[in-house]
Length: 244
View 1 (tube, one colour):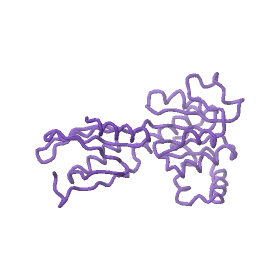
View 2: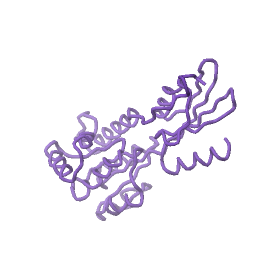
View 3: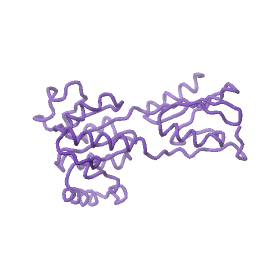
View 4: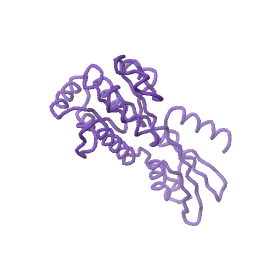
């Protein structure tokens, strides 16, 4: 990988965006492909679907196209699972997400709940979400899980997650509680289309009856949302639809 391409790749990764280094094995050349399409060079038409699949899966692959070999080396930002609320469900999530690859973060301004003793080895911010997000903004590679049941804490975080287009936004509460939440978000100017993407009641419907089971239902739903998320890359095809 040449120095310029490496510099561009590091810039993209530093901005928490996804990219693929497309290596033309036959020609011995490499291209940087950004998921957001910014500054993209043209790519072979026959590789568009493979590029989209690699962005979605996060798994690099070799592709043979009309006798030419290409290696798609993908770089996705580390996925963040941001939990608003240092509650029992959050403790269970901390336990079961350790081997999933998600970077778990707990945010809660309530010092009685957000203690290092309750969240050993977990990134814990004893502060308001708006303060934390000002220094570490949300982005499309974040999942936002709101479980405090306190609108003063949850609402800002949910609105921020919707605006940042997080791949998952979930909120604890009954349908009645969520209806009130929706009304508040509408009053803040959040569009109905975005509000409709909130997973509420939170988690897969598996009949979860305790914090540990609710955590499992949430984690499964988050994983599903990440693996089934939309990919923004549409591709700029080489002239006349040629493969090379």
